[in-house]
Length: 140
Image 1 (cartoon, one colour):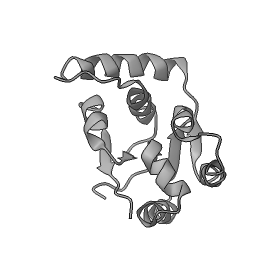
Image 2: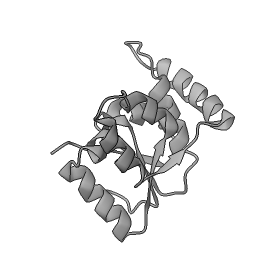
Image 3: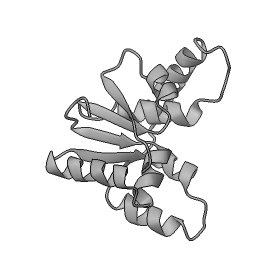
Image 4: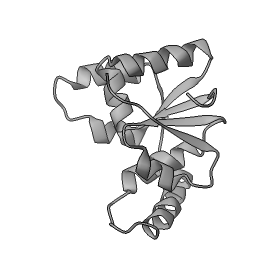
């Protein structure tokens, strides 16, 4: 961990890892409690990880440990701006909509902010020029 965050935002893979009881994510949750940081997840992340299966029970437990952030019009407009900016710098076009909503959500949180993700490249691209730090979390 590079900074001592106040806000820790989980993307879909990080939230899935927390739900699965992954040791690396449990360590992040423990650190968050010890330093009085808040774990967050965007409500759009739920749509990305929930599938209606029995696996959702673990996800529902994990969601109790995080503060969900609703997607507001402010977040939606900022996500579109971030997505358009990132898409113009990519050689290979790929839909960045969900990642841009996560990135825009991060920019609304109290600093310092860390976004946890298994694939930092897209989020780093989206968050260039913001005070948000992106950290890779590897499932253990």
